[in-house]
Length: 201
Image (cartoon, rainbow, N blue to C red; front, side, top):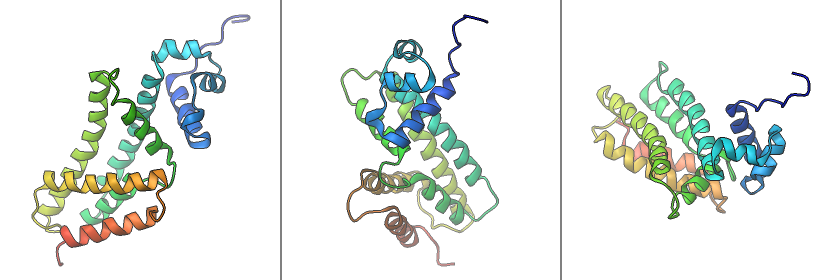
């Protein structure tokens, strides 16, 4: 309508723009004002939609995790040995490198959730993200055990330990710890799996 107010962009466009800003400029450059300029909205309008920067970051993380979850589902349901699909899970889990935007965002959301102001709903939503990764890994381990590809371990307990290893090593990559890169992490994880999970077949 001539002279009318320009409609706000769809929320997914805002979340996409937020993720792209994190990837290109770093999280410290993602302000409500800067994001508003990127999508043609005022910072007040963004606050109206999201309520706070914490909520914007969590929504962006959930959106990013939704995309990762779809990719994870595609990788884990394809016709391939369980070991190949486990390698694909690990490859998807580990950051691409220092300042990987998804891991940068995840660490920031996790850090903000530790404050006294963080609400139970936000923590529950973060737990739901973690739960999806865990359930998919448990199911894959159970399948590999049933097929004789993996040793007879407790899938849930092994998944907890493997994800703890992945989280610790991935953190080193994400923060750029010297002497730890993605290739080294993948090698460590593959050696761990060969020693603790794979059968001799």
